[in-house]
Length: 314
Length: 312
Image 1 (cartoon, chains in turn yellow, orange):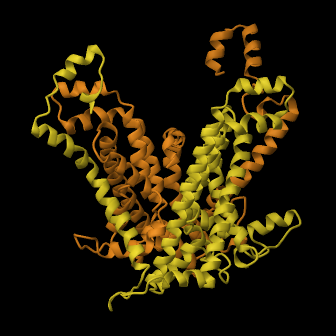
Image 2 (tube, each protein chain N blue to C red):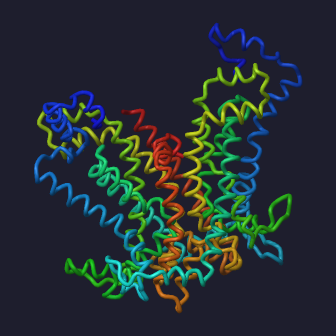
C-alpha cells in the first residue's frame, strides 16, 4: 500500500496524515482487496475450478447419473489410450494444431511483410484482411461450407478449375477433408498473427534497414538478417497463444465436418463431446478431457520456458 | 510525413509544392521489404497485383457472403462474384425462421455478459493493481491458470455444474442466464485492466484519500475514469469473446428458443427446404455486429493486441 512506499518530500506531509493502522484499519486493509476480488474468484471457482476437479474425479469412475458412481481406477484412461478412435483423434488434433499454428504464422508473416507501411491505402487493406479474425467461427464455417461446395460447379472448384485443378470434394471426402479444415483455420487465424507481427515490425529500428542496404543487402536479406532476429519475442508469444487454443479445437471441426467423413477429421474435443453429451459416457469423456488438459498445461509451460530461455540468451 | 507537416516545412509556393511531392514519395526503408519504395510504373504494378491477390483471398470470401446474401441463390453452385437478381427474400426467409429471436438472444447474452464481465474485471483489477496483500501472487497464478481451462476442455463437467450450480443448487440449463454468468470472469480482461490501472499515479489516489474519499469513491471516481483506454480494450475483446462463444450456448440451449445466432446457423443449414441464401443472410446478421464494433473501436483493438497482456 501507498503508506509503505517511500514518498518524495513534497508528498511526505500528505502520507503522514494517513490514519495510523488502527485494528479496524488493519482489518479493512486485509479484507478490502478480497472484497474486490470476490466476484471474479467466485465465478472462477464455480465455472472453472470445480468443473476441473469434477473432470479429474469422474475420470476415475464409471459415472452413472442415477445409479451412483463406481470406482474403476485407471480403466477410463486405458480405454482412451487403447481405443483406435481416440488415438486417431489425438493424431488429428496434433496435426490440426501444428498445421494451423505453423500455417497461420507463416502466412501471417508474409501478409505482415507485404502490408507493412504507413500509407492510407495499406491501412484500408489491412483492415479488410483482418475481418476473418473478428468474424465468429460459426460465420466463417458457413462461408467456407458454401465456398467448398463439393460439386464441380461449386465456387472453390470453379476457381481451382481455372488453374487446371480439381474438382475436389473438399470437406466431403476423407482424402481432402483434413486439409480443407486446415485451410479454413489458417484463413481465420493468419490475419490475427499478421496484426501481432505488424506490431513487432513497427518496433524495428528503420535506420538498421538503411545501414543494411548501404552494406549491399537486398530486401530479402534485410528481412532475414535484420527483421527476423528482432521478432523472436513476438513469435514466441504467438506460439504460446496457439499452443493454448490449438489443442482445444472444436467449433470449426464440429461445424465443417463434425469429425467426418468416417472420422477423418475427428479431433479430441468433437469425440469427447459425442461420447459425453450424446452417448452419456461421462467417465471416458472426462478421462479424455483430463488428457487434453494435461497436454495443454505441459505444452504451455514448455513453450513459455523455451521463450524465456531464448530471451535470456539474446 | 503527413501533408500538414510537409506544408509547414516546405511552404505553399511553387517550389514548395515540388519539394513536397518529392517528400511524399515513399521512403524505401519505411518497411522491411521496402515495397512502397519501388519507384515508377513497375512499383505500381507489383503493389497492385500483391494487394489484389491478398484482398481476393482474405476479403473475397466476406465479399461473396455479403453479395450472395442479397441474391437469389438456391444452391452453393449459384454463388457468384457479381450481384445477381438483387433481393431481400433471403432476409425475409430468415425472419420467418425466427432469426430475429436468435439475434435477440445473442444481444441479450452479449449485453448482460459484457457488463458483468467488465464490472468483475475492473473490480478484480483494482485489487490486483492498487493493493498489496498476502496471497496476491497465488491469485495471479490462479487467474493465469484459468486461461488454460477453456469451456471446450471443461465441457462435460461444466454441463453438470450448469445443471446444478454448487451451493445455490440452481439449474441454468435451458436459460440464457447459463450463457451469461460463466463468461463473467475472464482472465484476459482482468490482466489487461490490471496493467492499465498500474499506470495511474499513486499521488492521485492519495490526494483523493486526503479529500476524504472512501475506497469505493476512489475506485469509481478516480481510478476508473483514468483507465478509459483500458475499458475500451476490454470492451471490444470481451464483445468478440462472448459473440464467438459456441460451446457454452451449445451446452446450455435445450430448445431452439434459446439459440444464439451462431448456434442457429447450423439448424438453418440443415433445413433442406431453405435455400443457401437464407443461411448466408443469417451469417451476415451474425457477422455485422462484430464487424461494426471492430470498425468503430479499431484503435482500442490494436491497443489490446499490442498490450503485453495478450501473452496470456
